Length: 113
Image (cartoon, rainbow, N blue to C red; front, side, top):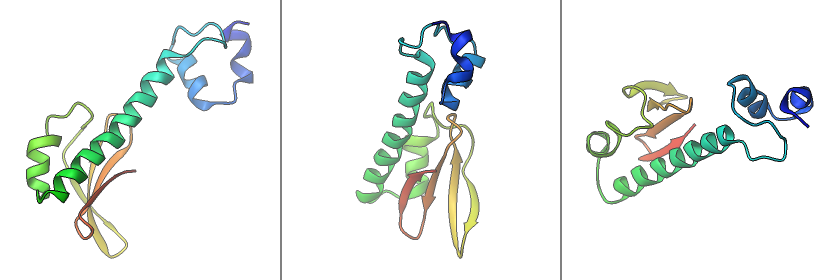
């Protein structure tokens, strides 16, 4: 079965997006390299948050984590921006995956959102 005939039957939006990008997946039995790459980036975003949390647990503050780990990391796509989340102020950094790395200064914790 070719991808063209199966595109409408795919349940996954990621799979349809992969087809739209021209990914070379011509058979539904093949593993799609575009989706694998996207999943690897998502895992790496979680790994980055974990690495930052480890640094904070060891006593590093946000400016140090930004300079040492984040500023030149390939997933980072911009500068930290402050925003309000309820009554708390958080720092949010855009990632190339479309997600955000969020630092909550009250809890001193990084998360991917």
